[in-house]
Length: 299
Ligand SMILES: Nc1nc2c(c(=O)[nH]1)N[C@H]1C(S)=C(S)[C@@H](COP(=O)(O)O)O[C@H]1N2
Ligand SMILES: [Mo]
Image 1: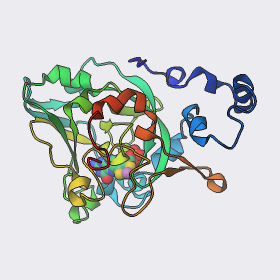
Image 2 (image 1 turned 90 degrees about the vertical axis):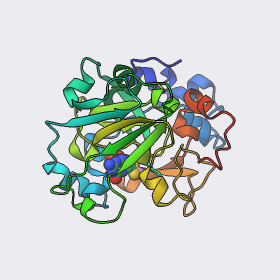
Image 3 (image 1 turned 180 degrees about the horizontal axis):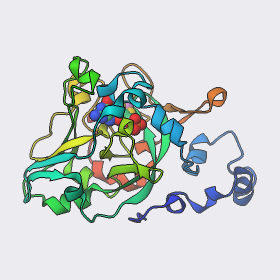
Image 4 (image 1 turned 120 degrees about the vertical axis):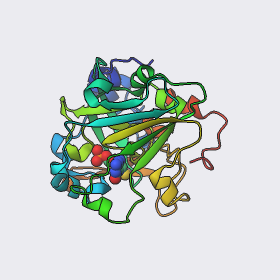
């Protein structure tokens, strides 16, 4: 089951540390060797992280431009120290915290997660961070809170994007409280053991690995505990295309493209597609959160 201290060995089933040939041999010839089971093969895949160069040069961060190579170039002037995060709403300890005060002595750990953008590309990223529930415990969630709302900084001097109406700024996202409390949901402050680069959402961003990437809001300056489902930027901009839940689901297509498979970033000539997994491969851990919901309606 879930262990709080995930390392690469923990997130990777033992069998996948063997190479594929050994795996096939171990499972008995024919059981995975046939062309029959791409899905089964994916369930056993090794979570081999993408490179630092890939993770930090192919980004979505519309505040810094809409092309994938814009953020790496344009985000470098964002000052992330000092950084203030306002915590408000239904909490015992509201306030404007420095990042150091807010994180305090919460230890960081490594989490190697699949990352699946709604645009149907994916990577594997070795984050450093901590469970959001630890931060929420510190600020004290009050009765009546049902959702957590997040906001990204708006810095017109360095973010050329916020001076244009491409999105309704600030970039905002939200999670239902049980999703926010789930142990897979983290606040990331690093990648590969280094401070998280600006283009990836420095100094602190959300990572919700079973949801489309747009839920994982970057460079957070406000966290609000609220009763009602909060404003979520992509959901509000095109509700028929981007749901509030935005759970990765190969069976529910985007109106303009299939979500059944994804392009794995990198590889150049060897770029490959793979089947998209229900809840991005985290079904065992999170499916129970959505019991009784029609995921084709509440997508
Ligand atoms: N503030 C903010 N957060 C954001 C975005 C953005 O444009 N602005 N893009 C989202 C989308 S669509 C994706 S896929 C991920 C990309 O994260 P990465 O660049 O670290 O891979 O960030 C998400 N968080
Ligand atoms: Mo995305």
